[in-house]
Image (cartoon, rainbow, N blue to C red; front, side):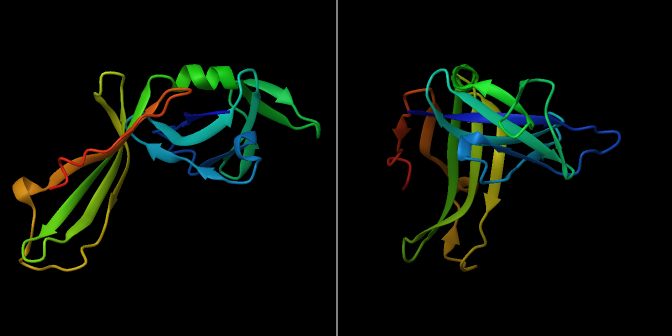
Length: 184
């Protein structure tokens, strides 16, 4: 079984400022979790990246919950399930094809205490890169509150951003590289 990270999207109307909230549910996790989509105002789309495990030829069913109304997208084929519900459907082969060239990079920024040498995580960014490692977009950015505001805490050259883990989003190959040389 392979796992691929797949980006689901829903359009946003910038003029009417609708919809307000979009989530997606699907057979990729047995319909258990509401995956809340985040608005990317730059692309004018709600987006969420979901890990999908499957086999070639397998059908993946899903449906959007847009402002508390169940709906399907015109961008995907629809299928009627055993309960008579209309759902979007995509094959795992399509998931593999669409997810093939994406890279997700996690960049962490640390602050080091000059006296103790303790390293404290102050922020983390989840970045989407193209096949040439060029930044496509920042998927998520998290700032962590500082545990202490001491004059002994310093950021060298406004902080060291270290690429701790890079995952290549290829169908059957996940490369995980740790950059230990830059953790000084």
